[in-house]
Image (cartoon, rainbow, N blue to C red):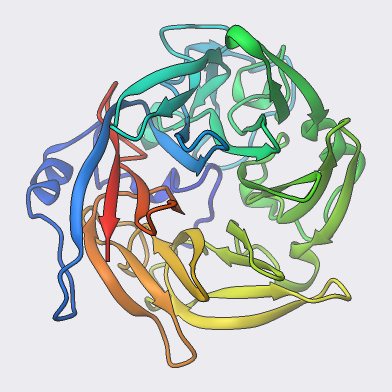
Length: 373
């Protein structure tokens, strides 16, 4: 049966892992692989993370990582419209230091410290593995940090806090500046998928360009713009021209580039996802093809790289995550053998930093890898 995404990866991970099952553990022990004579150096940069997602370097040179948290048990069934599909009903937590989402700072030496915790976190139904969403992305405008909430909203079991953009203050404080849940309700996209509809969206990526933030929702299929003062406007309704492609990755290098996760369909071959360029007249042009389940995009110099969460057709397979260089002649593998990587950035040292074990692992089992090509 054709099945779409309710929270990124949630549906198709069923059958591949329990909470951090033996299939994942065995795959993780296989090690990393490369396809070129030059061997990329892969090392573990930081450990102890809870469902790590997007990551970026801050103005102080440290690495900042968004963490989904560990979910929660609060249900809102009967209190507000719920998500559609097998991922529902969600349960969540609000203001929980034990379970909540988190933003961590990682020093140049790999020392992890908490910037802010007790952020909203939610999980899918037990039927598909209780997979977690929370904070999905971190971005800076100048020295000011912002983050994107993806696991909040009433449909996720978090009735008191909507999905949106938050501004991080001093001493672990934060403030909601843009209510994206409300914006989506007021400004629906043209072609939402009714079988996989999330009332509060599944906001997976956010970057900053100049003095504005650009959050993107994978479930509805939209890219929006948020000012520092919280004003929201639509950049492009991706669903209107592309349908339900599940856009997940976003980067800027002279232009905006968007890549997609796609749907987990046993009838589709591997390598059927794309990188799109947003043109000046706000249309999408295919920049590259032949990709699979993309969750990250980054430039290293003038070359674009994509992070593929899994290269297997249909559902994700542990140990098949890959970084590829995007070329006109198809993707070229840099390193493979990654286990459910969920975010990627390039550091000042030109190395790749990758969130790994980003779904389906227990408390503290997420990590960041450093990959020097």
